[in-house]
Image 1 (cartoon, helix red, strand yellow):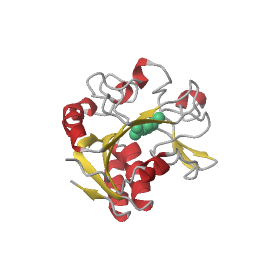
Image 2 (image 1 turned 45 degrees about the vertical axis):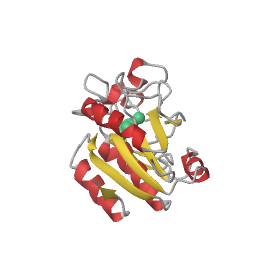
Image 3 (image 1 turned 90 degrees about the vertical axis):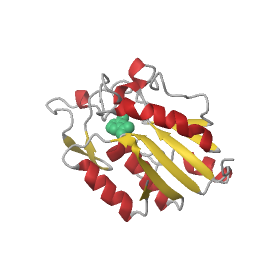
Image 4 (image 1 turned 135 degrees about the vertical axis):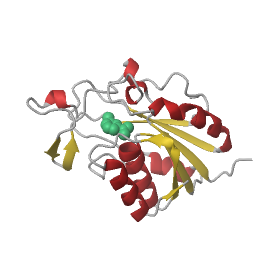
Length: 201
Ligand code: VGL
Ligand code: ZN
């Protein structure tokens, strides 16, 4: 019997983050069978979906002269400029076709504000605009959160760090996550998660 206080958060397992996608993470599709097998062990199952309007400010295409993966200063701090990805309603924004999505209790869409990027399932990148997930989890009695999905060094890391800071006992399943890993970002993300009290299995 799944414990009622345990939530699984499945982060951004979408076509654009899988091989062939606009912002492909190496081996991103390889985690799908393991996530599918894990869903029934959790009482609360939340999926997130990166969901940007066309022309989102985080897209390098909106910043002439800036290459994808360059970093620029936004009002809320440094921001990586990404290739256009996960545009609302596009095939790239859809969940991986083999992912079992029927068990999801809640699907949180994030990154829909044109000027703010949103890596974390809890707060946008200004670190203050909430997605509503904290209230949802608390009102369902959740105290423990397990994070899986894409990408380990961005949306998974930001989500896990926020969950831990909010007081949820937080764990990341390393085998069910894959990293973009630009300039050592995977190791840095892991160190930041550990510092925030996140554990790994
Ligand atoms: C993500 C970069 C841009 C992620 C989303 O899901 O990790 N990374 N948007
Ligand atoms: Zn995005």
